[in-house]
Image (spheres, rainbow, N blue to C red):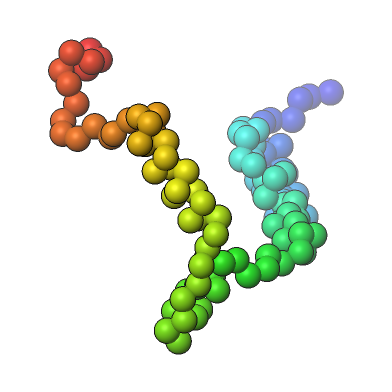
Length: 107
């Protein structure tokens, strides 16, 4: 029995892909079609978690146009703590300004 030429098999594969609406990929290159065919997970994950409630920052932005002030105790406590830490000299170092040093340059 004679072997079927490769070109004829490729034509058959191409026709099969057109009929069954699949991707024609004779070289077997990884194209990600398996992943792209799957359902999207984003909407179901978004429905799983409850919606976020309002925060102090969002309320402050909403009521700013009305001229109302809001107090964020957490932020005030944080800023007070940072001032105390800096007064003791334990705060984060200052960020560097200017161009990088030549002695640290990789070559």
